[in-house]
Length: 451
Image (cartoon, rainbow, N blue to C red; front, top):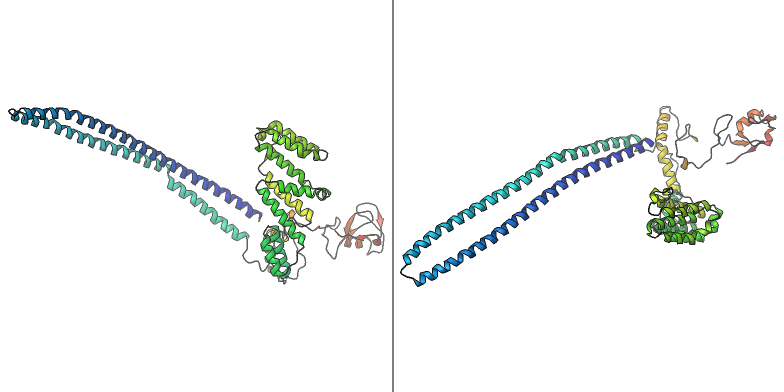
């Protein structure tokens, strides 16, 4: 399982790197598109400005040509005798105007051609830059790397996790009511109060009322903490100050410390934190004098808290830490487990499953009866936090205690197993000396020891 967990972390890390590379390629492509779009818009604006200037110049030229035409018309009306001369002058003036129109059309054609050339150049430059990015090939390569990695990971999962665990499990009949109780307790501890109530009603379970009330109150406090509101937690800690003190739980001070740190970090005026400290911290001067001194020293580093010697107080995990601390304090006060029994059983079972499966295959090859065993022949690797039963190993025989061979307390206070006591005392008939110290005793002076 540990190897699978490490492989999972490696897969996730590689996947994040691949996604980051793909994001980088997309950002580069979008940057090129934005640059080309900006160039085309600038070119369009420039052409519009040129067109407006050209239209303004043309209208001004037409206005100047209008004056001579009106004079010619008046002259033609007053002098009939010179009509022939006027017709010749009109034909002569028509020729330059045609030439001007031809020149204008030609200029327009040249401008359109220049516009097309510049637009084509911008588009071709964009295509060239996109090809240099090699976007399709790079993205395809990253996707291929992710696919290969996931394929190997799926094979690793199939190798480490078996789909059929019926051979590992004993065929003993389950107590349905006990299973329902485990599920209901888990739902309460997970904050699913309505589902847990329905489970208890349908299964006919009668859990202690304090159990339900404990987790209703706890999850209201945790909901406020997620919203960065510590007042409900502080009210609860002050209400149960004496009980928590008898259990040596400092959750109230931890909450006040976190609130002080939060005020000092978020408030622009450091006097807000000082005023809060003067109000809340005097109660803890005798029990937490050193911690109070550290908190007050943080005021000197206002504005550069991350560079101060106390920067660990301002880490990003402080809210998660207080979340777990509140759960532990509440469960300890109400004498309920910090983790549900169902969650503990599943965690222990999952961690032990690979070794159990391997042991089962070995025993099948030796034709041993798996179901008749009362004790496993090998130690199953289980995390330390999932071990709840004390195991005694005899310092003489180096064997673990069993119901048939329990630990025995000697007169001197040392402990050995029953088989060693019988062996040293010749089956409880003689005095014997402790194997650790020179104290002598008889078998009747020893006591069966229970952990």
